[in-house]
Image 1 (tube, one colour):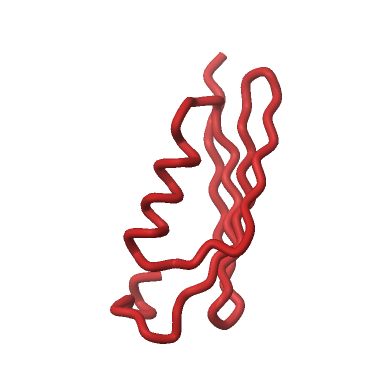
Image 2 (image 1 turned 90 degrees about the horizontal axis):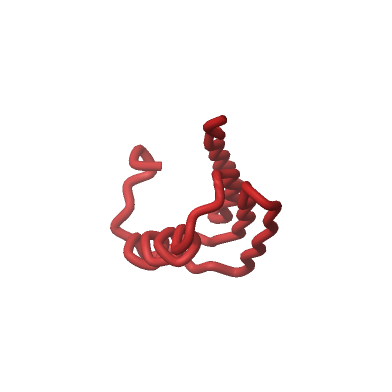
Length: 74
């Protein structure tokens, strides 16, 4: 049985709270962290929980005051 993925992103001022539930796959967390680094988010905390088939990622990141990101892009 194929599992689905779920992503949730919530913003509170400059803070972003991201949760990701996906079928277990190597390298996903590091790829996502590189994406956040590329768009200049500062990761304050990240946790990873796994079961036999599923990975759950919880990330608290912050958008820097000086950024090229347009609020509409979020």
